[in-house]
Length: 113
Length: 111
Image 1 (cartoon, rainbow over the protein chains, first blue to last red):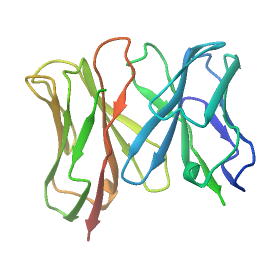
Image 2: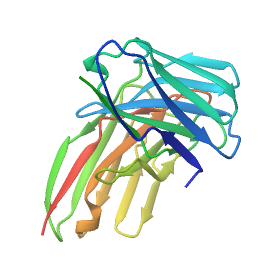
Image 3: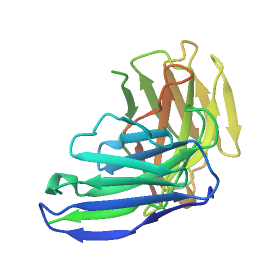
């Protein structure tokens, strides 16, 4: 694989609580992405990063924020979790340009009660 | 915005039979990629197509990119239980644009 880890792998939380998911890569790749996966919707881009402190919104960014203070870490924060944010979250990297092959982490299953 | 649609959403296949899944984009693509996700796993890259009309094969899998670079197909021959999973296509309008993923085709194989 591409040396991508995600933590935690599973999390159950309550509505209104803040949640932070971490994506860690070991190969110093520039581009990192956060997706959510829901039945019938495939993979939808939440936020992405093209370098340290350089981030931008994807198609479903409302309710999420991100930070990238180091090349190897890309954090996804749900400021106040809602039940609609129950999903599987995948982090991905590309080893070259933005449109190159994406390599995915193992995913985090988040349940918001 | 760019939309990528996949059909069918579900595909039930008898072991040994062939099937095809289709990917259609609302815009012309610079390239298209296919990924496979096993149940409980993460998406894994299968192949990338770049040229108009391009055809690539991986053992029993045949991938095709349309002449207009707006559609693609994945054909699997002699389906096996190891083919179970969800197949996603993903395309980008141009270099420097992000990939947009289709909704996936979930393949179930009946032994």
